[in-house]
Every structure is written in structure tokens, then in C-alpha cells.
Amino acid sequence: MQVLLPPGWPRPKGYSNGVAASGRMVFIAGMIGWDAHGVFHTDDFAGQVRQALQNVMDVLKESGGKPEHIVRMTWYVTDKREYLAAGREVGAIFRELVGSYNAAMTAVEVKALIEDRAKVEIEVTAVVPQ
Image (tube, rainbow, N blue to C red; front, side):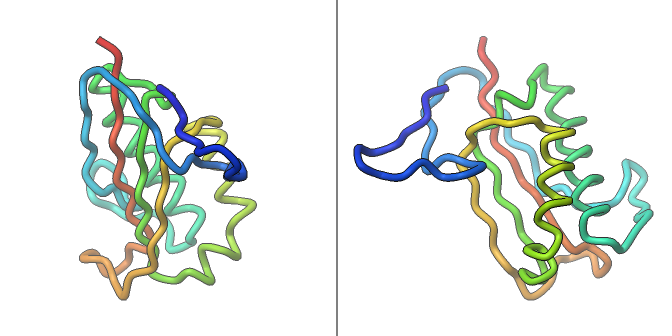
């Protein structure tokens, strides 16, 4: 994976502006904060992030991929203030489950998600070396 940083641009914190990679493409659908059986165990934002990221990691592992193979993440959140307020806790969860890496990332506030209790949905693209 090659991080793309144009000359003179400041390095972003916690993500990259762009990534180039080659290998087997893995596309992971939006994962929300329920378990493998479709059960929510919390309405806490950070708790739902933990479960959504664990779901992503489980699907990625099934592909033979690892967290460092993630090249793109898109987060959909229903309340940007709640997302920002949980920043430290979310960062700690992210480092615990995913680690520290340079994926291109986007976060978008949305009016709602299809599942009423869902507060966050995370979709991922990974490139697994062949």
C-alpha cells in the first residue's frame, strides 16, 4: 500500500487523503452495532462503534485479510456531535480492534440509518495481497 500525500500538504491525523494498492479487492458492506445475530447490546455510540468494527474485522478475516489491508473506510453517523464527543473513546476502540494505519477515510452525518437503533454504519474496502 502506498499512501498518497501531495507535496506541501500536511499529513492528516488518523487517516490518509489517498491510498494506492494492488491485490485481491475485498468489499465489506456497511456494518452496524449489532451482533452476528442482529441483536443490539447497547445504544451507546462508542459501544456500537466497537461492535460495528468487530463485525468489519470478522468479515475481513474471513477474506484472509488483516486490518493493515484496509484501504478505505466510510463511516455514516446519525449525530456528528455524538461522534465528536465520543472521539477519544472511539479512537481507543479503533486502535484496539484495527490498529494504526493509513486508510483513506470519510465520515458523513446522515439523517437516519435503515435500522432505527443504529447510530453508526461502517463500510470498508480492503486490498489483500495475492
